[in-house]
Image 1 (cartoon, rainbow, N blue to C red):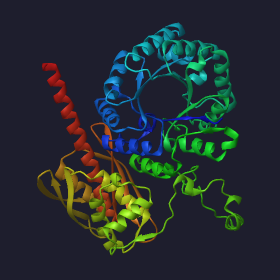
Image 2 (cartoon, one colour):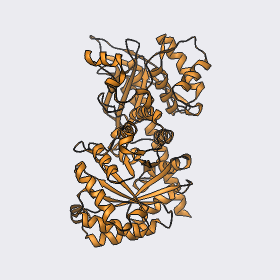
Image 3 (cartoon, rainbow, N blue to C red):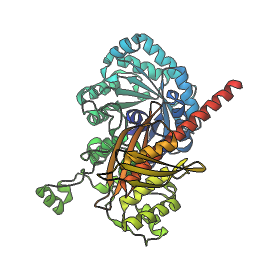
Image 4 (cartoon, rainbow, N blue to C red):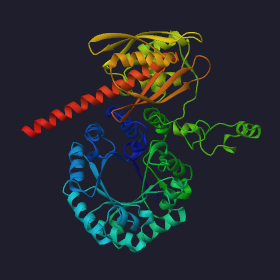
Length: 519
């Protein structure tokens, strides 16, 4: 009988911790919906006690997600567990995931505690979390470096306290596959109540062993894998879920396991997360990299032409990889755009057709020919900017050259009024940014600027991703246009809108706080 492997995604928690800029609630929601559409069993949507913003994001996602189980992280602290419950309780089903360090190094140097005290606290907090839900997961932080005798004691006590899932993280990516498999095997054979829980693994990639460790643990009897899409996460990242999922799919006879994942959504989910998180996918990345299904060697090309299986162990269509093809022109109607989006796997609820079609016509007039990747990029950008933004780029004019100082005139819509300013800079992009800053009066610093080509040839779209710093927080902005100066301006306006939204959230949270105090 084939065993089902539970897929636990922590892109929105462990993955976000490693990003250059924090995600907005709307961006987190887009990722959560993509994960739900992909068929992820458990989505760890955040660490609610960490900040008011994260609490609101977890609560918002918990209200929307229906087909995946939502989960919140908490330390072995009552206020953490209370916050997780308050954020998640709106969901029909939810999980509280609590953790505490168990390795001697962490217990002595970080917790300033002892093993018996750690076990007592873990048991107490598991029972406390059980007041809110039967679905409690317990993690032994740095489990990979915890002596097996200690680990067996902690796991047995946690299960007796009511933990339904026991997670053994290789927190620092130190363990080798044979060692990790032995840990799981010993727990299964030595812990008397182990059958009352699901054994889970969470592997990091510091030594490049994350996928190998996760797979070895499944061989040994683990039944849940925790990881992230594209391997995002602390330091070198987490186990890349798309890798283990496709390993199970491709070598099904060997593993004798299956998942609930919709494999056709893997590529699109990977691209969506890469775009939103501003984390490019390496070309040689397994499964989802741009070179994963390309062949350069003459011998390889000849072999593929004769039989694709000579050099491809899985078909690109399985992960939903679309073919790059000529798609639409300015003469195409609304129905054609809608039909093409459906062919790419989008539902009508995934985008606003009116907004998309308007942007499509503008692009088609500029390019003449619109490709699938253009349309998908427009759908993504428009989905982010579907609501009316506080700052809107109305028009701009730039003068630049080798013998003159770059000058920019910018007009922005700011709420209900329009403002215009002119400025000079080291180049056209710097000039336009200086003019925008004069209008918005936000004291920001440009941390990172990146220009990438979306498409092929001279008519390719230019996508600009920037990271700016404001009040010691970092914000991401993205712009997309055939003119790179325009896309640069749109990226800055997008980032400033994210700052403005964050300020509104802070004001609302302060208002609620003072209201609660008065009550």
